[in-house]
Length: 117
Length: 153
Image 1 (tube, helix red, strand yellow):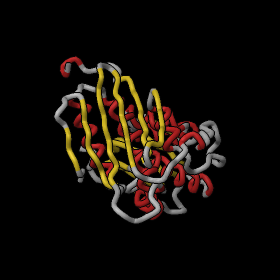
Image 2 (tube, rainbow over the protein chains, first blue to last red):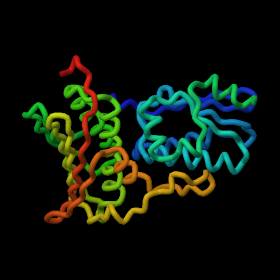
Image 3 (cartoon, helix red, strand yellow):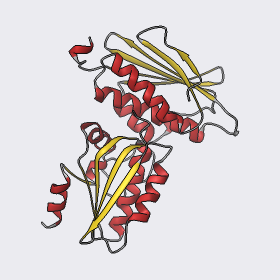
Image 4 (spheres, rainbow over the protein chains, first blue to last red):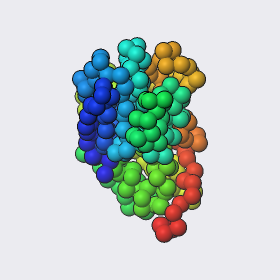
């Protein structure tokens, strides 16, 4: 069901924030999604990893929210990466060119490992 | 909730939504159900959902100068391996061609926020046609269904 609501679960370990996003993000809740992220992120975070494994759908409104977050993290010097996107989500990121401005990893493990490189 | 139903034809889905962004998820459910029954691959269903979403979001967010309730009609039809999607609303005239494509090669600091919806729709669909007819915006999209799953043939 596409009507599954947006949810965000976060955990922080060693100043790395993992945000697991589930449900769908469209024009009706993208602003709320952006706000949820903003309140979850601390300036002291050295990295933010957004895990999209449970995300069913994202529209351009959701992509915008990701971009806004990426920009603000880039400004404060926090590493930002996405992981575990379905093929459909990857397609949306590729079509919008966002895969060039945001790092995308296959899994959360891979994203976490990349921080130590 | 959708305000009308006309699903007499197996290959045709016709319904309407109100000018409320929460209706997008309702439309998505209808589209998913149609695509599933028609054996349309998930990637194509996703592209259709995304395109309809972008157009509905634009119309609902920017298409009305009053705060009245409006009805937006949607039609999806499968003819062989081609899907045709028509979205019709009584909002203000819009000029989809005037929107400049975003620079998808821009770096993160230069990448502008916005201007993505119609661009994505054009990327996802095989054709995009807009016309203004008797005070209504009518957008017609087509998309090849792609490889259908055999069990749904």
